[in-house]
Image 1 (cartoon, rainbow, N blue to C red):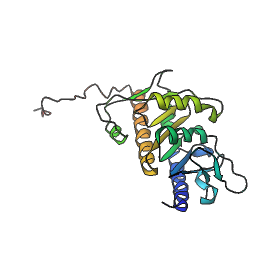
Image 2 (tube, rainbow, N blue to C red):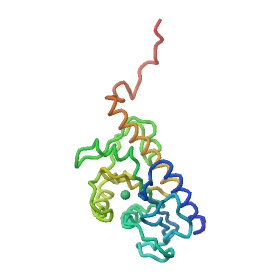
Image 3 (cartoon, protein in one colour):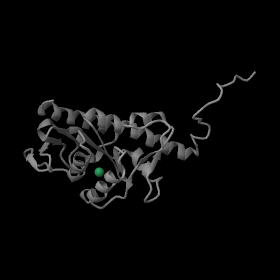
Image 4 (cartoon, rainbow, N blue to C red):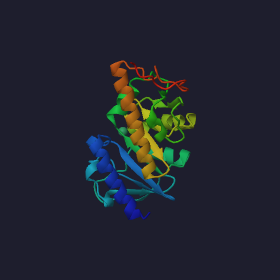
Length: 222
Ligand code: ZN
């Protein structure tokens, strides 16, 4: 895909994610890699209004190759995006402030992972099955976004099966092999976190009657 199309794609995704509440209030962000070039949305701006010319270009080590004119700053998320590019060879990384993800992080005690099991949408996450007990790291938040770098990097190493790192009371960094894949990962995680939060509020244990090997089909009552 050409650089021009990737720049367009970042703008389109930012508008779509804004409607979902993932990048409102200038928060969140997106970065897409094309070979050795990384395209990254700018910082501190209304993400739903950015234009293709507003996108930064970085090299594979995170050095800025091309910056937009004027008022834009490189996002403080840059080292965090770079961690997923370097450690997981990601093709795209999304940083979302999804409220459902934020609420889900409040259900996880410090030092423990978010555990997902027996929800169909888990199958949308890379390499994850319905009966798995899938663990996602939740790291504690910091005063400044870039200060998350060390703990996010360690969480990526510690959870080899995870394609996301959740940040308590903040959001999530989630990645995929390309922009579409990263988007579907983020959509599935958002759904799963929403399900966890709603079931917790309602006192529902969704695993209570879920059987891995049903021995008989349902029986109609007379
Ligand atoms: Zn953030």
